[in-house]
Image (cartoon, rainbow, N blue to C red; front, side, top):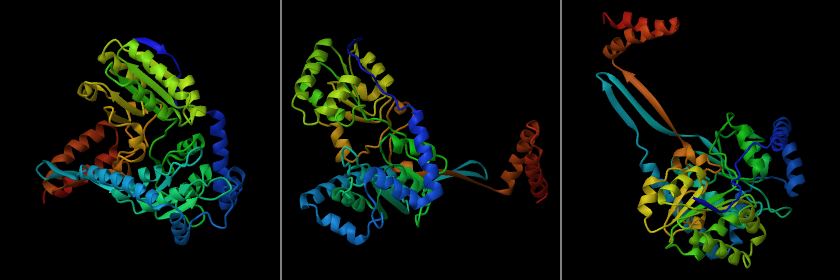
Length: 423
């Protein structure tokens, strides 16, 4: 393996200053409620409406501002997400099995009751994110979804975002951003009931708020700056490879960008193409920083080494620009979402194809996948028994309890021995 271009793979690390700042905000928000919400919303977003929640009339007015093509495109994208989430749900079957005569064990999948969905704004109005948390939750059977999205500073809401949130199925929509939005949903401020789970991407303050609120409610995943890794052989098209790398680099100056090639010659051709495309890229002010600071290019000596390098990086998005896609599909283990062949690209997954774009970053793909319909379901076990089966298990249980000196536990078995022995 040769490193053709070095850079940093920035991990999601706890920033002490950010942590303390967010902790202070959350304490203020919990103690002072909507007064604190208004204070921060005015300070950060120049936004202090009579009500942060949109009425049905305001939602309809927002949608009416959009051209028909924008509405149809969102409908198309959301239909794909809904169809895939429905297909995923069909794989999650209840289970019941009799492991011994009279001993019946099982599990069932129960949706959480309420979810708070955060739909980010900021540098880009990422209205496509609405469908990624709201639709799987609704398909899973979540009764109540509260959605928050930040305002366009001093101007109000972004109509395409409101349309996407409404069409995805949110029950209530609030134009509110950042830590105050997370507090509104997690604490249950004003007339909002505290949610059982927070979901959605956001900036470092939103991510830190989720981290600190975990335990009070559930969260989907903690995600840092976005990442792309591409594995390319000599038959790949360097123009396509470069274009896809820069497509993710424009997200954020801290975006992770990695290319693993199977020859040094292709690596150099791809780097030259990236530099060429950067010269005319409309978002080069961001993409050039992430490529310059974080872009990594390796020349692997073999497909096996390419797999090892990729699995160690554990990218959020992984594209395969190789002839033998089957080998890599079979052997790769660490990624958030896999894009097989040059015909697909990360942007499809982000916007339209139907898979989810809320994915693990910062090497979290080593131990978790991204958001999907199963994230909103609790797999709960149950057991029932006949008296004869209870009598069979009771002596074993009593002896095990006594060996652990948990005598009250043992008595719960002994009382059943006495009850069922002469029945």
